Length: 93
Image (tube, rainbow, N blue to C red; front, side):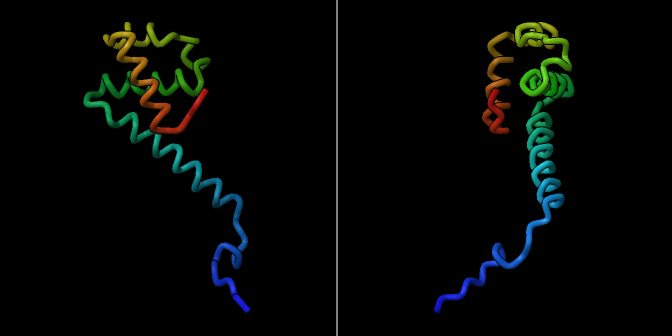
């Protein structure tokens, strides 16, 4: 007879603890991605791009082109940041 010593089956899952862990993982990825900007200005552009990807209503439905213009970046550079954000976080619209 085979016994299963895997703790996955032995301990009940605490839903709150699991939710906190997952939330921490998401927030950590977001903050790390934003902190990869070389300057404070670049981090601000990255934060704005993250808002654009997650909740565009919070930035007044601003377009990526407008974000780039305000941040002194080309439209292509900002689109690349949005793509980088989506790849890093796994967030897909």
